[in-house]
Image (cartoon, rainbow, N blue to C red):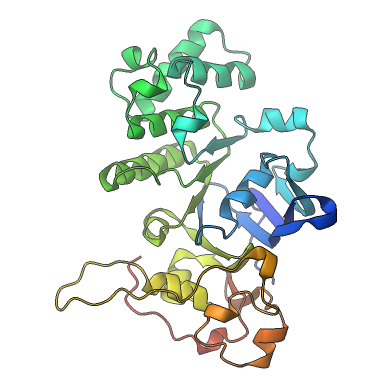
Length: 339
């Protein structure tokens, strides 16, 4: 696959991650490659268990003790993140790379005020700022993420804030040191639809103002369509399709992508229709089928021998558009995608 345009901000190649004892391990990420351009937004989508969060956590050295990277590279600003010492990684996390976790209630420290938690990040990564300068920056950040009355909120604790407000604090912490890259792991999952839209809009505004790149993990294709420039679809620990949002939505080239798009809820008039779903369940990674992992759920694999015996590589199906399917040319373009 040759999709080289120019040097990306983040280039992940052939990432492999295992969990468990090395003598009896389970490979959960199987050869994932990603490229994220400076100032652009990459959306990573897939069902639960597809490997989205594990991929991102491995880049920042945040895997649980049972997890380990076994192969691959992740080049960011001239350095391989997977080769950094823990000391160097601590300076990258929260500094050059900002992280927004899925659940702010567990990510934030309940016994520290929100001002103290932002200040902690500033003291670690911006030691040239004195106490007064840090306090000014904290108020600026709270104002930037649209938290009203920042001079009062700064002394409040996480439990005193709503879910949407806590997520805004997480965004403020992530942006505190002007990172070049923001990683957001399903940042709106626990929020209602109205607040979700506000947070997504805010995240995009902040990202564009800072010209940072954004990697957004989600299971919601509507979110990808709304905010991302490029989309990466993951299934069973691998990338099965990647390309511009327009290509992926209008010319999906993997049966899984087609299934996800057809399963989206849309507002239409006329008779009530049953929402299409993808048959079956994501595979147990301990019992992956031979050949294509998606084969048991695929509507075009049928009894084709190659789908049973070979794992399809990620091949170009168009400019900057690739899919891991032997029969991508049989997938008719999905008409009417709302991008």
